[in-house]
Image (cartoon, rainbow, N blue to C red; front, side, top):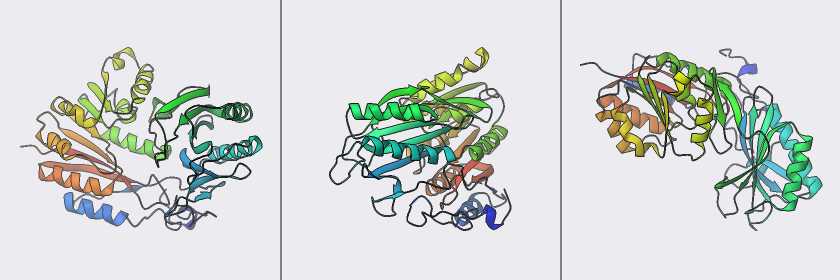
Length: 385
């Protein structure tokens, strides 16, 4: 979408600017941080023109975590007012997939009807703290997670789950238990209540399963464009390692064109998702793939065996020891860096270039229209000689 008209660059939201979900509403296709993107690549690859890819600016969000506050008579479900922990109710968020807004409406109605108390952060009481919603695109059904302020479900919560599932178009309903006085949204314990246990998405032609504890991109249509670009960059027939791999979305999309694949991830639910996704591939493809559980820093020996490394670190970027291992590797010929943090990427990319790697190609992706944020996919190759 390259049009510059208001229709394609302005978000019209009645909750702005109270809601912290968006930084601005106008010219969202040209966020200020684009200047920093340009400056970074002028320093490490001045000959390269780095495009910024965009798609929908409304209705794109298929994943959302929302706070639940207010009262049983009037539940408030939304995001915090900027700089506070006061919830801004966002019943008609224009960024949300319509199925998310419909699910929130039904949840509020059901909570009110059953007298379910939202969480009170000051008193540390109430029953429902947060809600997580994920849309299955092919059906528009929603995978719902109720984060409850209890160690187990009581009769009232069980009644809520049954009523919701009977009335809504749900993919599944889960409970997550978080009773600590903490800003952490999700706890460690889960209960699957109703529906289908795993949500499936086809991403870049690859079927992938997701447990609700596992990360999934929210702007899937644009993320698929990033996946397709990475597939074009990656050398054919090589041994690939996918660090910070999650459920293996990027690595699995490269499986057919690779000699072997190892995916590394510390989320304890990711391996089961990876294995389920792998079962949908041919026996020949399954034989090429392995999964290693644990942090990426604990599997740096893979840098000494792979020819292609995919790295998709958190916002802070790669650790110093990780960067050193990449630079010391004698086997690596290519690094695909997917960045969600501009500062971390700037440091890491300069380090790689100083160590003899060159930027072959790169692109920016406006995965969160309305925010001053750009994600980067960058292909590094080792200089010959």
